[in-house]
Image (cartoon, rainbow, N blue to C red; front, side, top):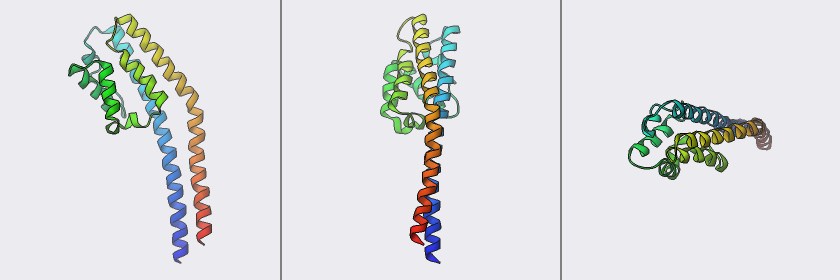
Length: 170
């Protein structure tokens, strides 16, 4: 009886780990999409509003990125440049789940966008923003199939290893 319970626990634990890894990858893809939408909204506001950068970032962000934009705004309103605020956010990255889920390439693309804010005239900022947004969109297009495939792999691997473990215990 205890062997059956142990086998069931091994199967459930392994499957749960696979599902958790799959969901983490899906959350990364969702965050990338939200960041791309947010960056596009900032670019739109930059094009049609002549306000200080701190005001421009007010109320920005979606479900998982709102805290990131609020921290950027806080740093900028506190007298730091956008680049300094971004560097500070990366140092305190553990506090911002949406940054932690991104890999180095993704952080670099978002960093290019953030660091370009408030550094030059409006047209140059718009051009730099457009380049960063296009890079992020292209990155999302290339990683979407990889993330979908790896997510299925994590679940399948979790189930397979769980079954193997359960069979070994029985």
